[in-house]
Image: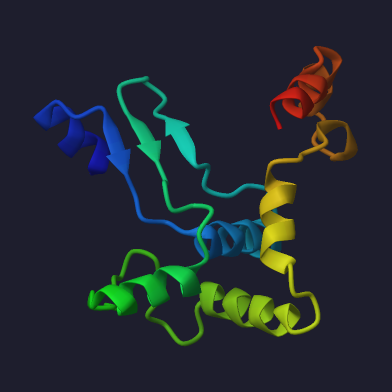
Length: 147
């Protein structure tokens, strides 16, 4: 729907408000429940190249954004949309959020470490057989140079 709206109005960039917690939670939900290693990238070009989705808050923790909103007097409106399923008490996101919260007590830099890991991928150390061709072309080295 966002791409269609953007195209109809001549927009090429779509900025979303996902924050670091969203990226980490999505990574773990995909890993634990979907059996894939992926999250939401900070910048994503649509398949047809017509739109670019950006997530400028992707490296900011949710608690920091909530504090900033409180300091500025902005209302904090909890998500209750049916699209993401976060309103359900038994949602996967809630489970993962609680897991991360419990781990942070003993791993203080957990989120920073996970953010770093999302940008430090060793393709040759994963099991996806399709990555072998990419590795052979030197993608690991290129990713390391960019990181």
